[in-house]
Image 1 (cartoon, rainbow, N blue to C red):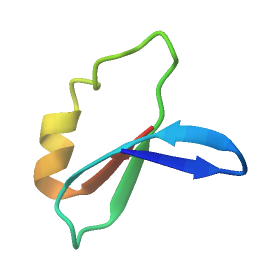
Image 2 (spheres, one colour):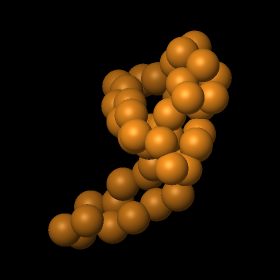
Image 3 (cartoon, one colour):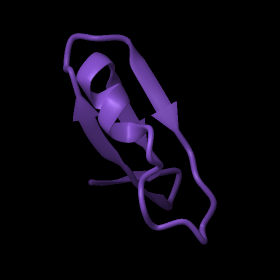
Length: 50
C-alpha cells in the first residue's frame, strides 16, 4: 500500500490479526524481504511494515 504524507510517498504493508496490538517494523532501504520473524508475529499481532 502507499500513502502520501507531507508530499512524501510512503510504502507500507499491513498483515496479521486485525484487532491485536500493532507491531511496526522498519527496515533499511537495502532490505527487500520481510524479516524471518514475520510469520510468527502475524499469528499473534497486527504488523505494519515500512
